[in-house]
Amino acid sequence: MDNSTRCLATATVCNGSSCVVPASDFNAILSVVLSTVLTILLAMVMFSMGCNVEIKKFLGHIKRPWGICIGFLCQFGIMPLVGFILSVAFDILPIQAVVVLIMGCCPGGTASNILAYWVDGDMDLSVSMTTCSTLLALGMMPLCLLIYTKMWVDSGTIIIPYDNIGTSLVALVVPVSLGMFVNHKWPQKAKIILKIGSITGAVLIVLIAVVGGILYQSAWIIAPKLWIVGTIFPVAGYSLGFLLARIAGQPWHRCRTVALETGMQNTQLCSTVVQLSFTFEELNQVFTFPLIYSIFQLAFAAIFLGVYVTYKKCYGKNRQELSESKSDETVSESSLSKVNEGYQAHEQ
Image (cartoon, rainbow, N blue to C red; front, top):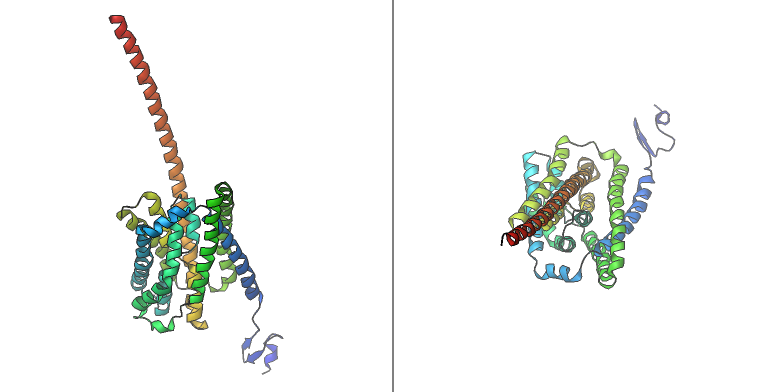
């Protein structure tokens, strides 16, 4: 039977009912263009976030790294363990369990710095935690993967992209350092840059989510269990990070910072590790998980932000009313005291 009646004119291979058509370059071109735009935007945002970091406070966190140590324990202790427990509890496929663990072993993402600013967190601690976790990931990622994935796969098959980690570190440290310098030299201009950067950060977060949906729209059909794991995982990270920081006696604004740094993972790095470590057939089963995690970590962070802003407005209003009532009571007491003094004078 003539295969030409069944295949498109552009097909390069025809075998019965199977035809191979050259892949479209649209996604590849779009990926390169958008990656470039996102990288530039990210550098601008991190520069603006650096404008809110004071050099003395930042160095103070490095010299007395109690907050950083808590973040380290959350990042490379709690998150891999939670990933392991979820993988076993939901009995997902071995290859899927490995990807969940890769996500758990990744360092904190830069989006946590933007959100830490919006929830009035400790920006000096946030930036120092992100920097240290990215640096320590060079050694901690292979170690955590060796410990947790050996029941499913030979750890030697997982490729750690050290060059990507190094690039992430440079892309974080350089713009933040420049922002810190601007804040030190021109604090008033730094405030203006910070406001612009926070708006750009919001646009960047939305853009990343939309781009992921466009580029990988054909990979959204995966096992329901993986959707559930992707939903629970970031919530567990936020909750346990906040709880551990509070148990350690950290103030509320640092607890919020540690929570965001714990649950907000570097999903781009996870996607890179997955692409380098698995075959095309295996990727069809797991590649969407970093995108799912990214969506839910942003969704729950947005809920967290909304709750905090609502609480802040209500608490601020109540506190203002309380202070006004106290001032009224003070005035009335002073007036009463004057009346009493006059009455006593009259008696005498």
